[in-house]
View 1 (tube, rainbow, N blue to C red):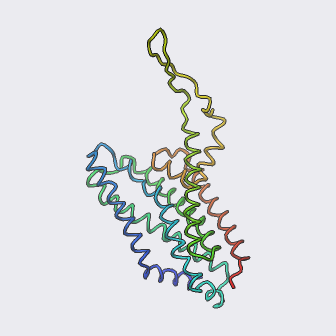
View 2: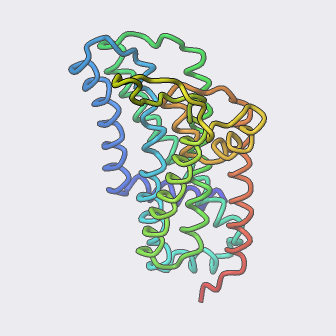
View 3: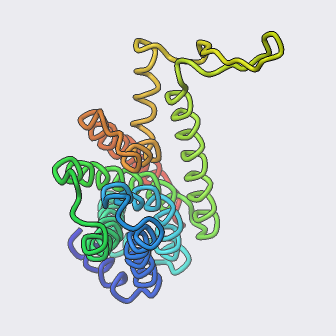
Length: 270
C-alpha cells in the first residue's frame, strides 16, 4: 500500500486541481474574518465565524474527489494497479487515505488563514478549549465525507457520473439535515394574533409540532449521523453531544467503507 499512497501523493503534488482548490479554501478562510471585520468591526468574535469551513468541506470534496479519482478509470490506472499485483483492498484503502489527507489539508488551509487574518482583526477566540474540541470533531466529520464519496468514486467508472452523483448526494444529505434541524428547532410556543374589541392582541400558543424531551433523541441521533447536521452545530456553536457526534462520524466512516469495499470487490473492471 505504501507504493500506492506514494503514487497518489505524487499525483496530488502535480495536480493543478488540488492546488487551485487549496488556494480557494485558503482565500475563503482569509476572506471570512476580513469581511466580518469590515462589516461589523469587533462585534462578532472569531469563534462566531470560525467553522464556516465545516459547511463548505462537504461541497468542496463532492467536486474534487470524483474529478481527481475519476480519471483513474478513464486512464486505465485502476486496471494497471491490479495488474501490478496490488489487491483491491489496498487500492481502495489507499484512495480513501489519500482522500482523508486531502480533506485535512483543505480544512487546515482554511483554518490557518482564518487564524492568521482573524486574530489581528477580531482577537483571540473567546473559548479556545471548546473550539479545539469542535475542530477535532469537524475533522472526523470531514473523514466521514471522504468515506461517503469514496464509495461513489471507486464504484462508478465514469468521471461525469461520479461527479454528478457526489454533488446530488451532498444535496440530499444537506436537505435531510435542514429538515431534521428545523424539526428540532421548532419553538414550544409561538405568538398568535387576533382582534378583540377592535384591538389587535397577541397570545402565546403551544406549538403542536414541538418535540418533548423524550421525543427528541431519534432526531438528535439522525442529525449527528448527518455530516451537514454536524456542520450546522459547529457553525451555530451548539455542540452539546460531542461524544455522540464523534461516534457517529466514526460509525459513518466504518459502515460506508465496509459497504464500498464490498461493492468494489465485486465490480467488473474489464
